[in-house]
Image (tube, rainbow, N blue to C red):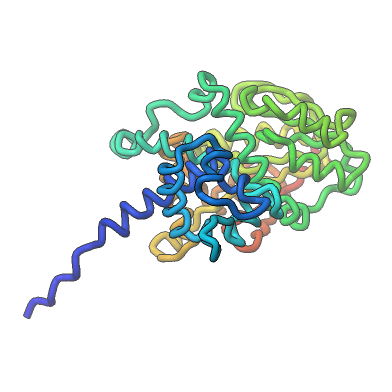
Length: 345
C-alpha cells in the first residue's frame, strides 16, 4: 500500500511571506522608521509626515512590520518599536544595526543574479568591481561591517592574546579599523596600519580621528593579492576576509602575511568556518551558513572554508603554535592564531 502523499507546500508562507517581511524590514531601515519611533509612539499619519511618505503607504508597510514583531500597536492605536527593534535598530538602544538593513537593500538587488550564478558557478560581476562604479555601495557595506564588528569586538578581544612586546599591527581587510582600534586601546604602545581596497577606506580616516588615534593608526590602500605590504609587523590580523578569496589565493596570502611577520610575531585569522560533518544537519546555525555560502556565490564567487584548510594554510606557511578558538555562540565565527619562530630570518 502506497503511503499518502504529503500535504502541498504553503508557498504563501514559505516564499511569499518571508519575501514581503524582508522587503518591509529593508524599506523600514532605508526610510528610518525605527529611528523615528525611538523617542516614543507615533500615529501612522505622524510617522508618514516625519518620513515624507504617504499615509496609505506607511500604513501598509507598518501593518507588515507589526506582523514581524518589530513594531507594536499601543492601546491608543499608535505605533511603537518592539523591545527588540528599540534595542538594535534605534539610536536609543544598545546598538543601531540599521546599516545592516541598508546593506541588505543592495544585497536584495544582487540576488536578482542568483539564477545565473547557480548556472554558471560565478557572479557576472563581483561586488568589489560593482563598488568601483557605485561608491555609495562601498560606503554602505563598510558601515554595516563596522556596526557588525562592534557587536563582536569584545568577544574577539577576549579570545586572543598579543605578544607582550608587540609594537606594530597590520589589519588586512580591516576597512573600518574597529578591531585595530580595540587592540590599540588594549596596548598603549601599539601602532596599527589598516590595509584594504580604496573603496573600503572611504570613511576610515574620519573614524580614526574620532577615536583619537590619528597618531597611532594609518591607512594604506592596496590589493592583498597583487600589492606589496607596507613593511613587517609583530601582529597581523586577517579578519573575515578569507571567505572572499579562493582556497588557492588564501594559501598564497597567508604565506605572504607570514613573510611580513617579525620573528615571534602572531598571525590571526578570524572566519566563519564550514563544517562538512554538519552539512546535512537542519538547524538555525546551518541554515545561516548555507545562506551565507549562497550569498558568496552571487557576490564574490567564493565560499567559506573548513577549519582543516585554514590550519593547512598556516602550517604550509611554516607558522607554529596553531590554535583555534570558537566564539560563542559559534555563529560568531572562529579565530585561528599562529606564531612565527623567533629564529626565523
